Length: 485
Picture 1 (spheres, rainbow, N blue to C red):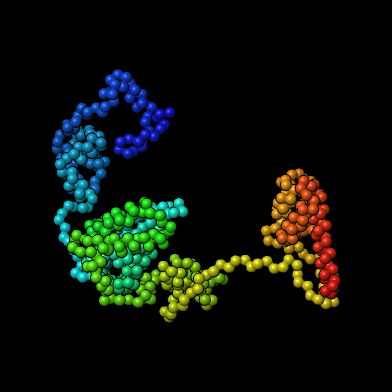
Picture 2: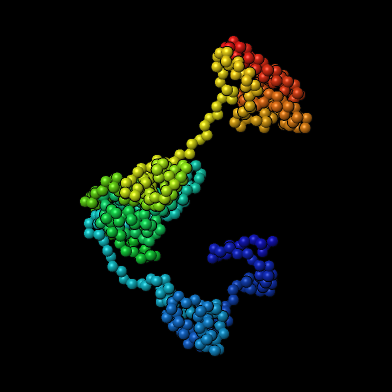
């Protein structure tokens, strides 16, 4: 049983111990005690297999093309050295121990260690930085887990946070939300800087900031050093906000957003930044950008465009932000639509470039059922209509049939129904004679029968009492109809 148990090793990995290993350990312990269980030093430790020029040649091959695998090196070495017989693991161990291998590792990662320049905007709102922090888990007070990302717009000159948005995903909608919050309050920047994440490099976001006249700085992928200011802010956010959430009760995403904004306003914005020698709040000084934009123009800047075809019968069209109904003249046509990625707003673009606002497509519920019996009018012609109509066609109340009748009768009798073929036949005969029935009158009749007959009565007695009540109700209806006639 021991070899089936997962064992956590000192390196943190979980492994299952083979049976042969257990027997070998027991044998070594019996022979040499605890000393026998200690790892042995390799006999070839520090020795080089084969000539030294083999490893040097392998290093030269990697310097020529750093992305070559060790399997490729093994093939090239066997072709160049006829007596080469080392294994791949031996080759890897000696190549990695070579003094020149760190240079190869830097070439493989694409990052070379060098001294970097420091850049900074000359004034507030010259350049904004945008990035996301996350995902990190948040435990709500209801007990449900929540995965959260925080997207932040940072002013490059003052290091002040212009907008912070908590979202469940780092997507295009979250990026637009963060940018529009900052632009609506402070105006537009001259340029922006963000990484090559899918949310920031999407066509919708890039086209939106281009319509606003915001230049995007070139940044290489997998190069966080260019985002050094906002990366330093993320370390403060981790220490002052994310770590504190472990002991904070959070009711929902809206409550989390309020906690985030309060932490930034009272903690981050007021702390003394060593790089600028003052607080971000004081260095920003509440300055607004001279490039202002209205809320309507800011919203329209991020509208997306899509070609879609509507249903020719209902006029329904499915857009990325919801379902809409087109006018009758455009039903069934493939045309251009513009939509708001954050709200359920869309418009149809005609061939002459006119825009027609669309209403959301609403699926209507089923209409309520009408009266089960047709309406009757006063007069002598009503009798002629009753005689001519004869027996009316049955129409049941929705979701009330034989299964519900069996359940109601079982509740009165205190036993499950049907228990036998006789029970089923008696109830079916009752239904064919008096059905279909209405839920409320039948439930009241069952309650009256239970009060008058008591419990543990035979099924036939209960059905006879219900039939008597139904006949009495019908006689009352006929008397009422005769008086009205």
